[in-house]
Length: 269
View (cartoon, rainbow, N blue to C red):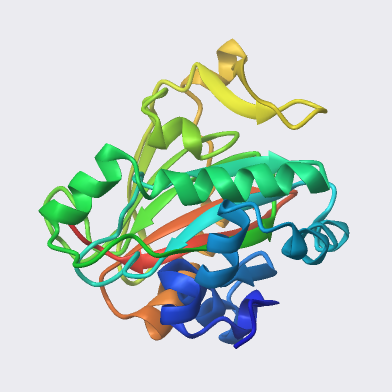
């Protein structure tokens, strides 16, 4: 067993967890996911228990992902057809030092054992103790980010439903803004554009700390996606459906006019 592999090789969910396996499928299919590495459940457990023998192997990876990387959870059973674990496990963003990677991995491992995460496992009837691997990816410092569903979560219509905001997508996840929303038909035609109230955005400062920044007055109610970007998102949804199936939940980000796929999973409860 390889304890650390390029992310595109991490297809075995039992070794690398659901998120790693999902992102490996994306990369092998040519979808625009940021590249990175997968750390096995065994390796993450050793790091969490301060096994110093593994530290040089892990910190050496930082150079490939510098200047900043995201350390993300990848639990066995995560992003399954029945339980997504969305928001239950920690992601540590903008890690900018090799030694900080180790602390981030420990924090991600610990997040699988919080009362909230354990209660979610019980509610979703996920058996056994948490078993967690880790994704290391290049950090995407987005100008615009959000989520996209291929089935409208409000009325279950088969269409692309998008929520978007300025900066990092965590502003939407944390409920800090009222995002813009868009509806796109399966043929790509834009059905609806609704401006939100995006009065702040999350960005990273030069040290990697995520900070809240006030949005310029003229941008608060201005749509943050243009028609070209909506077309790119529609195409991404179609390509993801060929890999993952019909009803999926996509996290995405635009950085320097490039669209990135951050995560893709089935729509779950």
